[in-house]
Length: 185
View 1 (cartoon, one colour):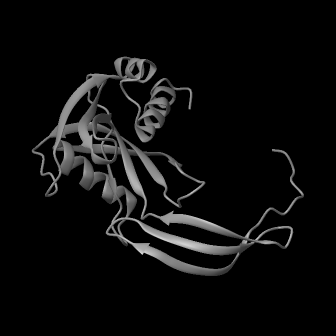
View 2 (cartoon, one colour):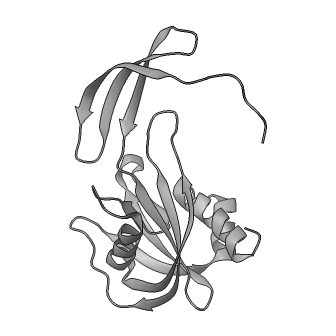
């Protein structure tokens, strides 16, 4: 690991709330830069989310097709969901997998934590591999509409290559799944 001697820390001088939504909150801070100057740093605070890589015994993954309003189109995604205040991330993953897909998993494995938008948000995505799945019944949140289906990892990666899967959290999860399930990581 290279040794770094430069201090690049930015410290908060002042902070103000710009917008409080149900999910997202926007802040505008004044921050002191390493050279002593002050700059504005606008960012979104987000409670964080879990992303589940659900693996069936036959080797297929459980995926979802869901309409995403900001882009006005359907997306193919791994199951995921927002972490509620004070909620344990693994319990959130277990809850989301059951609610969205109807599956429960006997075996859970933490995979990684990624930060998808470091330039404008503090959001973190916590990934879990869920195995030994059993289907019960889905119980979607009010206002949540999606289609659950299965796909091999190879086919899902092909969908990434051809642009059919473009959701960042899903692309990252599939790449991690490829390395983890292939025994490389």
